[in-house]
Amino acid sequence: MPSLCKGDLAARSYACAVKGPLYHKRPLFCSELKGERAMDKILDILLLLDPAMEALLSERGIGEDDIRPVVLHAEGNGVYLEHGNGHRLACFTPAHVTFWVEYLPKGNGYRIFRAYTHRMKILQGFNMASGKESPPIGWSCSPCGLPLELAAVKLTYLGETFVVDLPACPSCQRVLVSEENAVTRMALAEQMLEDK
Ligand SMILES: [Zn+2]
Image (cartoon, rainbow, N blue to C red; front, side, top):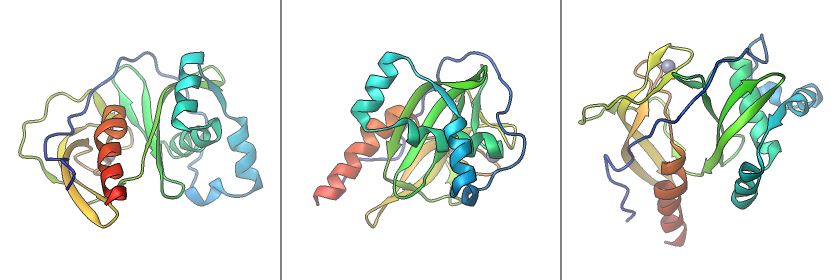
């Protein structure tokens, strides 16, 4: 069994900068990410990546075409997590992999600070109270306007279910998976389950 135990997945908050305008004014739904019109919108999104970030994404097998739908989905629906200093964090699961992107609107584009993935699935809507006192997370749920708090969140992968403490919105239960959790603990657990 993987050693993903409750309380093991503590989240971190990140350094941030300034707020920017919404790229899309109208709500955009997942189904609209398909088709030619949506493809034009996706290609319209200008990503600002420094060379170190480009190298890291290449190492992780994440392309700009994986990042753009995350940003489009988040900005189109106004659904993202927001840090006190303006960074936005959003996820999108087009198929079996969940892509997370931390970004900041900048001029006509989006500066990318982090992008990472996990294959483990978050069971949305099944959060329970965490037995732990929640430290300040630093991120809030943009649609609900509420700061995230630690919650006992259910994750599932290859038939196994885990309960881990992760930051989540106390109202809509939107969960935050940090880069640290995704690339270390979750990746390890996924690998162990795949090797079983
Ligand atoms: Zn919420």
